[in-house]
Image 1 (cartoon, rainbow, N blue to C red):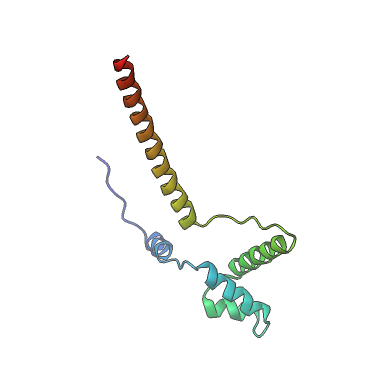
Image 2 (image 1 turned 90 degrees about the horizontal axis):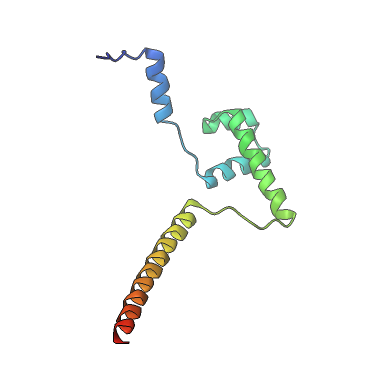
Length: 117
């Protein structure tokens, strides 16, 4: 029989931090990066204000600039959002069900016509 180890205070705190990690929306990330581009405050001050790591900010900044570069170079293909993906999957499921229903109806009609011959 296994006994569970009592978590140490350090692991307990890490687990709480992991579960309470803030999730920033794309709009929030863009606003933070745009705020930095205005250069009214330093990056360090901006990161303290929004309680983010500087490395996180620089990652967002790089992604923002890369997306702009792609768009300006004529790359208009964009990645689908999760809502769009789920809508397409739902539509695909419905279409597959319709095809399956039509195939069954076809088989029934075909068999009934074969019986008449």
